[in-house]
Image (cartoon, rainbow, N blue to C red):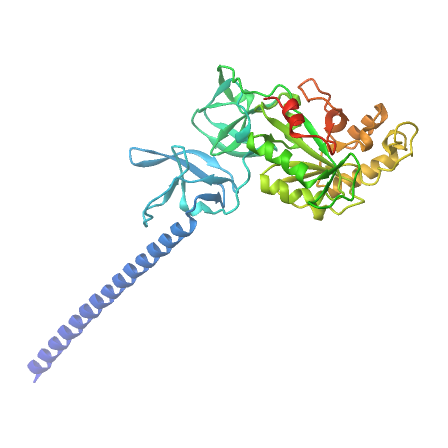
Length: 416
């Protein structure tokens, strides 16, 4: 009897041990399956993120590293701040192992998990500038800056590049398909290059007023323009490949901070009456212009277009006969407090523009002083001559365009 019990206990023990081993094996198998499934799910999720984050243009979502591929290893060579955009090299087939994207036309890479797609693309106007006959070589561990002075990336290694723009403190170069500044004290070497012959030595500024669309002949004043006249001017400028400037670019040209190509021109429009009729034509011909707007007379929302810059023509100081002489421009004689309040309001409405146009082309030393005090860095007048690097930035001349002005006049004033 005892023997039977012992045998039963032994068999029971063997059964329990066997069951334990079996269930442990089953449990281990289940865990391995779950781990494999989790890994596959994570890899699939990562692959989906890689696909979602890859695009022709991307933007960094956090501060992240730049890498260079060396001996099949990604070595960190720099840092990039959040919010910087890059163009990417095309990738024919994305896989779960495509964890780094190559930046276009560079040997540098960025991790897929620190970027997102960026649809909008800023206009790269600097690509129209003529580089200076100067190349720089940076030191190692160099910082690069946006034009507002914000540091946006660093590179551990030295690079060479042509100078596209320069200020007292910075050299600006094309890097990562954008204009980035290097402090001059971080430049190891400057290399002189041959002069580029296609440089504008002077630039005309054209001044238009009121456009009347086809069939409307109700205005016979000399500063009224037919649609046919404007189309002939704009067609000519487009066909010769003219570079139509912003007021900031013209200011930089005067200061010698940029070099512009021949056939550069600044188109300006005064007051705001009927100026919205210029917009479809500017967009059709892909030309840029500046509207000097009397902000008390016309709402700025009427003139929304990427092709039209808005600048100040005062808020409400465009009345005839207020001050002695000429047409009586108010900015020549009113009290400082009144003038400053008006100019402050105009600037605030127009996103703190720094470009100003004197009403009726009239100015004196007092007017110039008021414009400077209000924070403007340029002032536009008449006087029918080209702008050069010797031009006073507060007395920028323009050519008043008449209703009878033909294309031959544009040919005569453009630096060809």
